[in-house]
Image (cartoon, rainbow, N blue to C red; front, top):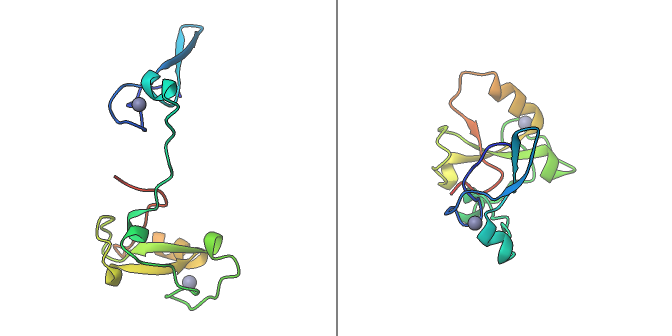
Length: 117
Ligand SMILES: [Zn+2]
Ligand SMILES: [Zn+2]
């Protein structure tokens, strides 16, 4: 990474410098303290998952039945508010409908795949 950002693990210190080449500073993906403590960023389930919502087996828009749900089905927020994880606001949408929705005027937004806190 080329920008000095906050350490994503502790959200406390800026990330450590990795090396400087041709006047460009390259940074590590964690701060010095997290590297020393070997702290790793644990993948957290997304907020909608923590709310207890589970993907359906088929698309709730066109009823497409997915063979590979992880790759073919996605969770969408009906009201476009990614923080609203009420079940009535969440819909399981297939990859095809996702493309159609992205081009439509509906407020629907795809849910984050990783945690958003
Ligand atoms: Zn850190
Ligand atoms: Zn669909």
